[in-house]
Image (cartoon, rainbow over the protein chains, first blue to last red):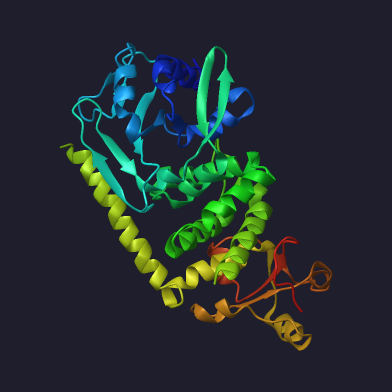
Length: 237
Length: 121
């Protein structure tokens, strides 16, 4: 069984959760799912992040009662695992659309499903619903996800791959997405706007990695995006 | 109370503190790496060139990128159009990267992406 099949099998297993309004697949699997027919050729960790609006926590918990193939891990109940090798881990993370501070993080305590809420996830907006076989997969709009990825802590191999995910998003972004990104960018605090531009320069100089989109191919687009974002800085100063 | 989640939340807040500190440093020495990466991000390609060629380019009006003087050892970094680059036979292609080859070259000519701004001279 290849990774695509595992990913789809896992998403099918949590189908009831994906039906909860506002819930979406987030994180590094999104570019995998956005590939033609969700080919999922990017090498990322074997898990899938599910964004849960904190206002929908009770709905998600109710939906999870119908999930039979996965169980909360003993170490961390926000991570659901399966003994079935056809499944990958599911990480539930909290999204607070009303969060004012995109740099903050806090924990929603819950015995059944505690959630780590990342302020940066408030940048995510509901986007397309991908139809795969008999499954509907809600995804975020690329602009917010790209910004969120550029603001994510980067550590070692995972961090580098997380950043290369941005390349996978740039490939699919259209002019409307870039305009949306600009609109979100200008609303960020100055230090986050700086962090976004700084991480884009890091991405521009990165070497490719096996199984990831080659940043070399997107350097010209990164340069153009940097110029666009800098012009916004000038406009707002 | 889940310790692991609380620990991760604290790490995110710590990162925010570091990020704010880095932002306050952006116009000082610690910001040099961003400025250097920013210059290279606009470069489609990079070449090590003889330092004698830099003198000639400066006489022609080409300007050094100031970030080259902010690192040690200092480097001469100039954006040069493709046609002018063709006239420098001793040039050696470098990867556009902060790698050993780049830092070993005292004089570097860059070819700017067409989409990038600041074209000069």
